[in-house]
Amino acid sequence: MQRKVVLTVPHAVCPDDAPSFSHMCDFLAPDAANCIYTVSKDVQGNEIEVVRPFVPTHTSRDECDLNRRWCNMNQKKKSARDHPFRKRVKNFVLEHTREVIFVLDVHSYPPHLEKWKDYLLVVLEDNNGRISSYVKDFVWFMNKSGIPTTYNVGNNNDLHLEMRTVLGKRSMLLEFNEVLTGHQNFMKICRLIVLWFNRL
Image 1 (cartoon, one colour):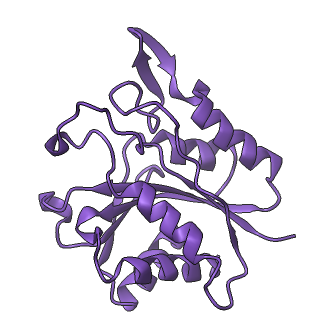
Image 2: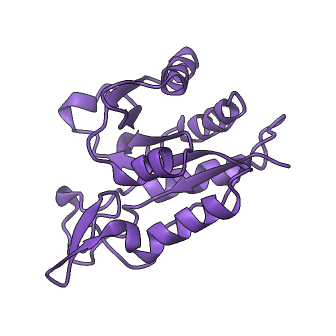
């Protein structure tokens, strides 16, 4: 039985008319998830299967924030957990529950964001104000490897919450600084993440 890691990218879809400064989608997140997935096939000694990233096909953040518990679609309040994207993720984890050891929710943030501009990676975790030992280990591992990384307590990041509290899977939300677009360390970070998966 090969252990699996699931990648999700809930804010992958950009509205056609959204200006770049509005950050209505995570510009780097789809590339980051695909980088982790692709690199995982070439990392020597990797014993983890990174599953092809789950990405919504059409729903943008302004239509329904797929990382929240509720959203307004067509002027009606609906549970984001009932969205086809969220159901695909949940069903896959349930069908492979013995193999899935971790769910990584991939996001990105603009490089000028003051509170995080000095970091390349930021981990968010919704865990009643506590930080899990595996989050601390990830932050330690990345900093030790030369990648400035920090963590913060999350706030209602429901995809990660559902994986952890409903399905009982270790999970965290990982933000990539969009300064990494075309950055020399981008591939290195993807490789380090895959290596860290093997510590789980």
